[in-house]
Every structure is written in structure tokens, then in C-alpha cells.
Length: 151
Image (cartoon, rainbow, N blue to C red; front, side, top):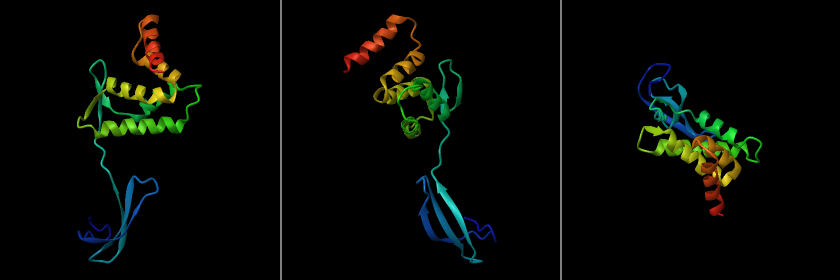
């Protein structure tokens, strides 16, 4: 780490602390040449994820799109925003932890439904009806029968 004052390449860590959100580490360093102190932050490097859509096109993963889909499904339902955000965090972490750098929309949709089902069954069915693109009332009924059979 180069000193921002004299550009010397050696420094020592004087103090390390976790940030309030727990996502980074704050380090106070002292330059071994000029003895001035400076602060650095260490964070986990996130590898950009690519989403492969149904039509084969690719775009960058956007957690806000996942959250917005959940928000629409949970509209006027007793589901806390914090619970939805936690679910999106878990989905994003699952994707980051996978060895693949590309993820399909089908995989993301399945994970969203997996998270929505225990939160609110109505929101689950709403999301599934859009995600699975039910063609008629019978395919919709089959999904409802699966839920009722699980109880």
C-alpha cells in the first residue's frame, strides 16, 4: 500500500476495526518513511454476475430487479420489507457463491419462489403466475393444488 503523502510502499497497520455494517475492515496505517497516518478499507471483491435471460440475451445481475419483483408479488400483503431484503441478500449470496459467473433467470426465479413460499403463499402464487407464465386456469390450479397438498 503506497503512502498517499510520500508514495513510499511500506506501511504498518496501527489499528484494525470492523465497519458498522460488518462488510469491510477499516485499517489505520502508518508510513514507515514519513510516519504519517492514513486510513484504508478492505472489502470483499464481488465478481460481476451475468444473467442469461430466456431469449438468450445477457445482462448484469441487478438485485433491485429481484427486489422489485418481490415487492410487486407482496403488494398489499403482510410481508416486511426487511424480510424481502434479507431474502434478496441470500439469493445474491447464493449466486456469488456458485462457481458459475452466469446464472439463468430460471434459477433466480426458482430461488425467489423458494423464499416467498414460507413468507406468504399469496405472494408466492402471484410471483409464480408471472414467472411460470401460466397459460390457462388449469395450470394455475395445478400450482395451487401443489401448495394445498404440502399442508
